[in-house]
Image 1: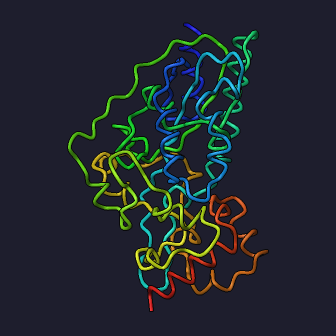
Image 2: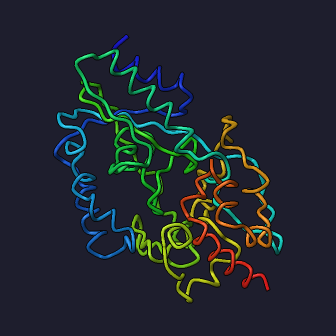
Amino acid sequence: MTLTERVKRKALELGFQVVGISRVTPDRPEAASLAEWLARGYHGEMAWMARTAKKRQNPALLLPGIRAIVSVGMNYDTEDQPDDRPGHGHIARYARGEDYHRVLGERLKALASFLQAEAPDSRSRAYVDTGAVMEKAWAQRAGLGWIGKHSNLVSAQHGSWLVLGEVLTTADLNPDEPGADLCGTCTLCIRACPTGAITEPYVVDARRCLSYLTIEQKGRIPKEFQRALGNRIFGCDDCLDVCPYNHQATPTAEPAFRATPLTLNPNLDALARQTAAEFQAAFRHSAVRRATHEGLQRSIAIAQQNAS
């Protein structure tokens, strides 16, 4: 069994549903796309995207001597049905269970350690949405799927319900074939976006995206988007929900991604009364913490107004 085969087998043993490998080469068209996206200002207040652009465009700045990237994905889709009656808020699917950084993090470290032991002369670094890595682009190169017109990765088997991680390595691994675009003429995701954030196929203006506005936006949410927010208080899944590949995806078997009563059917009045300390305690193992107490309260207030 080759080193590549052993690494892939280990990834599956660790609980990842998909694994693929891409070779790091000078030819990276996604680097030019990122530069154009930033030049348009589509990153909004995410100044860190611009600060880390060179590292995102060139992973050798993260790991000198890098040869390959091992991309992995875990399915987070569940059969939980949220209660969207008035008085309840809506939290994006990926944030209803345990924080995916925690779920993937230790397993990625284990995979990196395994690779290090199997190839002692190599060096490896693991990331899960925490470093300056263009995760979706590398996952597509590794054959995990393709980039949909909503700019998210789409897997023929798991739809867009994958959280991604990767191990950068100097080891010499055999690459997989890149994922082929199977979107065809479909534009369901573009038409489903409630704010027109998908300005053209494969391009999202984050400043109009409800996920960005409820999570990354630090100031006031512009008035023009508040009605479209509906009862969303953290994230938005509209462009994913309509994708045909998501309709045929199999729910996850990973218990950590199962929703809790707090994240599946959050009571807006109860959340509005939370102090900052109570927020930290309630969401200590949840990705919802990213929004901060102040940011979540802002979204809750808009959702309450929309329900009145």
